[in-house]
Image (cartoon, rainbow, N blue to C red; front, side, top):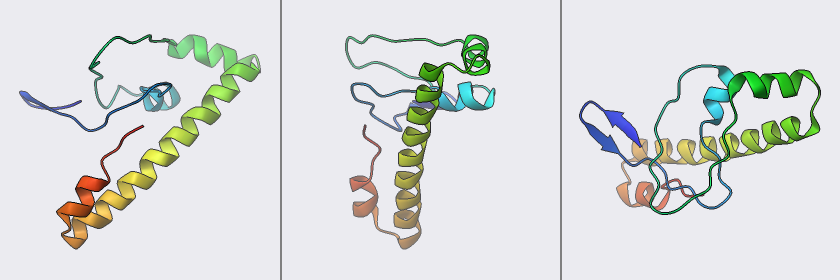
Length: 102
């Protein structure tokens, strides 16, 4: 969900195994959106400092998480690029087909 003043807009639907908050953990800035669950879920939380420590220690698990976050961000960027192309071409039907879903 992305807040725009007093309203929220759904920008993505994430499925099983998806990650969120990866931009914040990678670049150290604030989250760019909030997450609202549609049903029960299990969440694994990494604090930025702890994650940085694991990377500094050369943790294979931390590097695998970075690779998974990079793949996720790459996929989202590809979809966003397609959405922007659809917007600039004026094709709302194409845009609706490209909603982010993981």
